[in-house]
Amino acid sequence: MDDRTGAGEAAKVTTQEAGGIDWAAVRARLARQSRDMEQAAAPGGAWADALLLRRAEDLARVPSADEADAAAEAEAPVALLVGRGADGAYGLDLRHLSRIVPLPRVARVPHAPPELLGLIAIDGRVMRLFDVDRLCGRNAVPAGGGFAVVLRGGERPVALRLRTVDTVTGLDGTVAKAPPEAGSFVTAITPGRVAVLDVPAILETLRSMKEE
Image (cartoon, rainbow, N blue to C red; front, side):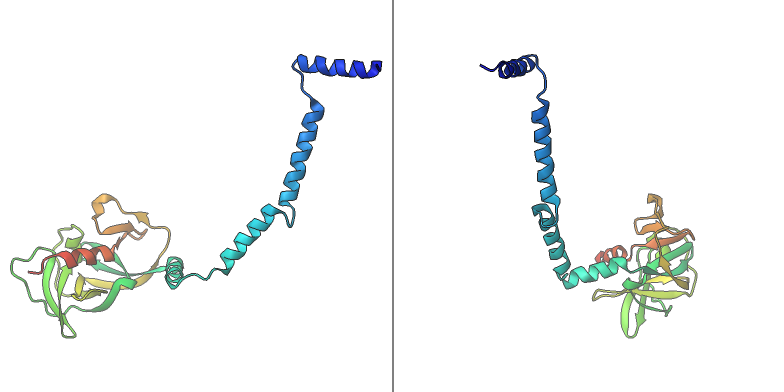
């Protein structure tokens, strides 16, 4: 028996029995893992090929018309019509407005709720006219004159009354979320203290109201 071989085996057994670490085996395992990772991430490797394939599929996919419209709408700045009621300034998204005309003659409706000012006729179409201040929970008394802002959509059009129509401005990211006391239809307040109205919510509420 070779004494050197016997001494080496004895040293190996002694090291393992003593709870030591086989550093040669550790280095070999780490080297093997490193080679596997390099092969996977290298050009032409399985990981890189799968990533490039998913990227190519995403670029080649043609979005639907609805997806394209939604993306364009999300990127486009929101244009607001800014006008004043009897008690504050309001901003209405132009996309939800149909017409803006000087206030025509208003026919009062007996026993109507306070926010319903009456009926008006525009181009032969009769519609209800609501006071924007009172819709937002304010108790201001509307003055005479002003403008009728016809909301877009629906078979039974409705209009909001504004005292003045001042300007059209873009809605940027500096608006602050409206506090609860601003009213259920006010979604944000601009730095210029313009109350941004949720026109679709207003329209839905007015449609559901019983016409007297």
